[in-house]
Image (cartoon, rainbow, N blue to C red; front, side, top):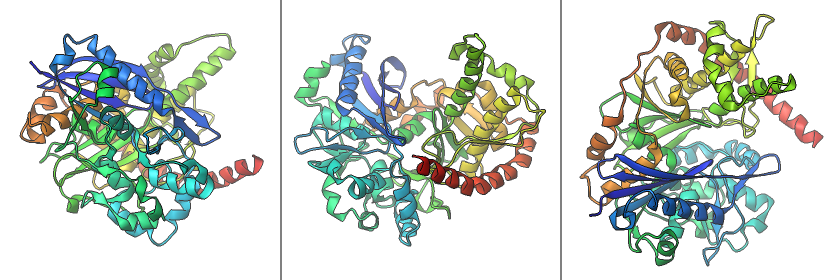
Length: 519
């Protein structure tokens, strides 16, 4: 009996293969840590062959955890980290290493393109702001600065597209990534206007076919079957970008409700549902993403902070470093255990913190590769607990900043990602958004979302709404109402947060110029 769906989620830090039964209950999972390399100050790349080998290995390990998996698997769906540029030649061999979404080498390219008159029209087509993480600006940077990087390249993939190619031999991408980089989201197709704006008309040979996994699938190749131990011919479904899949698994698609969805992990991703192309709200700053969902006429709008829990990691590293200098060793787990205590000791009026700790700057709700984190309002009365509280508040204020760029604040936010486990962060986020916060018992929302696309593609459900009813709603925990005192606090603080981050932009840029001059 075939009764197992597999979702692959190839993230930046870990690659997972997860087995679900046909009602969405998780059976088992296998995970392998992922790794990337830095290139200079702003580059970030990943070994493509290793990424595929590790993905195949997770499938082999999953087979060791699920009895008779080979005879039970219905389909495999694959999603993965978005953006980036993964080039292959005519024989399907990697051309260099895959550029990741973390790669900021194209930052100056983006700044130049955004100043041209054509960017407003490009934004109208894609519904997505230009950012250094995207394949379009990355290809433009290569052509302008290192054209030899494209020698021999025949196809430009994203991470999940590369894995789909290795599983099936098909060169394809999905509607979500195709459109927010090179396309028209209304038509779910490539756009000549966007390609011409990027001056990439001569490189259109790199663009793979757009395949909608919600309606199409391809068979597992014999080579991939031999490597994974799964039957050749098994249907393989190309999922949408990982953020779109996670939004499905976490409950963003819930028509008729005022729902937002935030993924608070290393990065912060904040989404609203648009139930038609006309419902998509494009902001004057030309930022954010519009992602096609695997549902006709439905989209997820997203604003994304480059760094979310990375800010918490940073403040913990500061604490750990100070303790180590005094001969006191504390693990990250031990430091995490102190967070609630520090938050309890903090003033209810902490300094303002701008959570732009990433070396790649910020991409939502504004784009600036020079953006850097800062404390505003420190005084002699400020202690370390106040700085910890300011970091948590800063994450929540950044989320509010992102949601307001997409329209009114939602009444409820469905929260996923590692930080969703923190009651303190849920409470602070709910206060900043003035919204109830709801989490899910589902641990692997991205892999689940990919598997849900496969379930609909293979006709196991008549619609995504039917699939959501069985896969998502039973996993939702009761909503936690917003703390009214915190709501009032953040209403008062937010104007100063936004005003100060806007005032600091020329300072960030001046600091970046100074650093470049020193180098």
